[in-house]
Image (cartoon, rainbow, N blue to C red; front, side, top):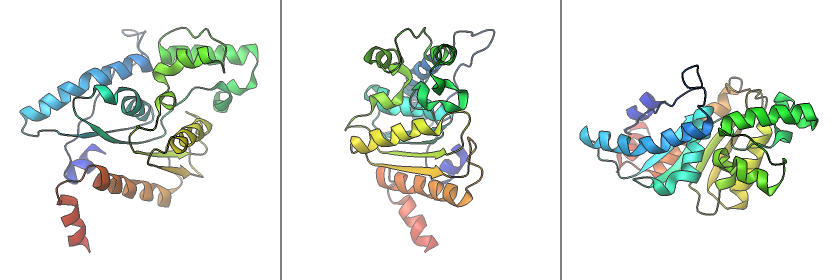
Length: 236
């Protein structure tokens, strides 16, 4: 993805983050999101050193990276050293309602399934989840890692793709994301790959359209001073 975007004329950077390991047992989605937030000024500064002054940016990712990109776009964009113009990505979890996470059996509503949901969501949030599911207190506890809960009428344009048969993160939660974008009138496009799982592997035509849409969004929200327009004219 980075090489493809560079070939289109964009300056790109891939940001790593700390994974859970014996050395870092307390790493979480929350700590990863903090690493992303804290790294952005360094990325901007390094680009400047290399002769690429950055005046605006987009954020993107796939799977966990998409989760982190959505969090930065909705939760942290106000702290960005340059304006965030849009966000795009695929198969990133954006909310943590147990009833949506059927692929893990969290929708059963039993003591066992609730405990399992608390364990996974707590590990992702980096803290113990104590509040009852579905309550305002639960939303506050999970908000730090739930991009959905940060969406408002000022959220940046959003382009996402999800697989209907995803067994890693639930398709159902992406429907909540879609509703929040619609309800808040956020410019967006949502691509559903009807026959695909987490790898978006079985809907080639839809996936190609999603990739084409990325360039359309970039042309709209981050135009390259005529570079892409000249390329399209040449292709025509």
